[in-house]
Length: 351
Image 1: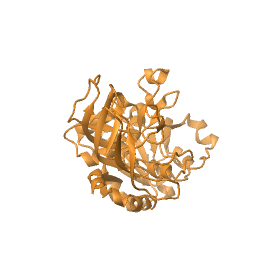
Image 2 (image 1 turned 180 degrees about the vertical axis):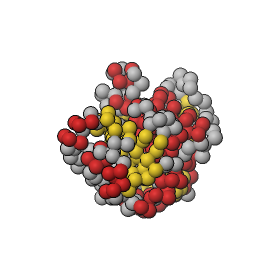
Image 3 (image 1 turned 90 degrees about the vertical axis):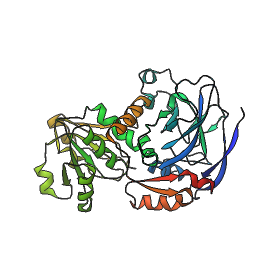
Image 4 (image 1 turned 135 degrees about the vertical axis):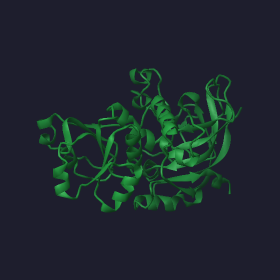
């Protein structure tokens, strides 16, 4: 097999829009799987990277790490998949496989740094990795996920990032029956946090700055809603939550939310504000509270999450778009004008 040229949407610089392009995909090695991409979710990370807002972007850049498709080729040593299977790829496509974290099935915390689906390093081609805004992708089978047949494929794509990013901390902090969980922010991440926490059996409390989100929070499964702009509501709910999942990427006052935690409660941040968030010592000390963070999830966790979603019929709330509308989608994403995740129909790439 030889390397192949495939169609994609890429940007050549931080100030440039994404446009039709071509990229090279590596030949399928003995452990590789080639996937014909059917749908790709649009994550805020795509926008940050395309525009070099986190710095270090290598151009040309092809974003996309919420990938669902069908297998078209398998390497000679592949054992878990066959041609024709549905498959998915999330935020990473490789890791060192040998460090303590990789050996414990926590590749997302690889001590050498996991290889990101895009803007990482493809050791086979000695170039940057390219993401899912493309016709095909070639990935080592260890980093490929099985997609349950009963899920809507387009609405499954965001589970590969938004789903597992919220699932991992909910599982790690043992969310379930008898646990009061607060979800801060109802967006791409937060709406998945609500759905998953509810299905896990928790009492789910949405914490939002906007009264316009109340009806939607209830539709998603929230048992209660707290308006964080209402001081009386915040005071009335002090020391009421065991765990808070903070999904907000804008600057915000974490201390106000820490007051809602019980003794030994934890607030885990999965949103990524641009600037440091001040934490008052006495927001933590008097009740032994914890301020933590979490990133994506392991391959094992991602598969568990997909299987759980299949069992409970959980997918993301999406708006399906054509690839030609990606630049407009980025502007709408910045304006918060999506409920709650854009997904690209990759058939449009061939138009």
